[in-house]
Length: 237
Ligand code: ARG
Ligand code: ZN
Ligand code: CA
Image (cartoon, rainbow, N blue to C red; front, top):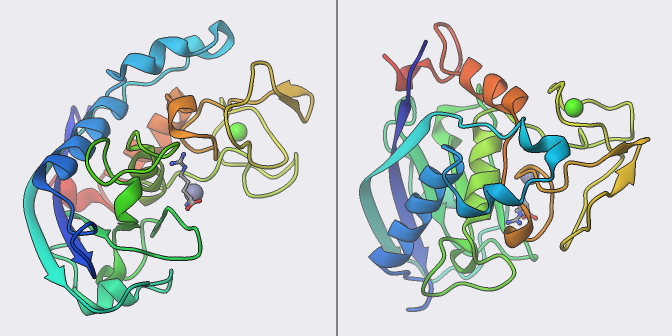
């Protein structure tokens, strides 16, 4: 009943060298991946094994790049404690997704704030070499799925293993329980907790080429945040 929800995006490129000052084309490539992945128009969705094929969700969420802000800064690593957000504050976070493209350090690809957190730090941070599909990108995280994963968190999704053992839930009924993340490119079936893992879900930790779907249950959980009195209702009002 909400129809397609459009999310305006402001990208803050914070760079300490020219490579990190990624091109407009690289940014556009990331917006295109978000639009494909949140509408199940990504070509690799068809790789989904038949056990899960009926659960592949068109989440009906679209993304429009509003603005890119570029900031030269001598700091080379920003960590995961929101320093980059305090240095370059978000634009209208109640109705805009802010994405900081900045080197985090420590091998971290990206991190996100869940809905309901402080406005001053709302949004996601992604390292430049894991953002988009062209330009300064680094395999096997060069298909834009870090942003898909982090925006999933931003829209209230948990990791599919629930960040705990078999009984720990991700609060989504149609993602089978698992006892931890999967990495690299697992073969199907990968069995944990007596069921086949949905290793191809964006909310696992596999390589970009090996994650290609959200489930219907995840779609419902994400869209709930846009409802009246939901934490991200500002995007629809
Ligand atoms: N927060 C996770 C990390 O930094 C992101 C994982 C994204 N996975 C991916 N295939 N792009 O490790
Ligand atoms: Zn995550
Ligand atoms: Ca589940």
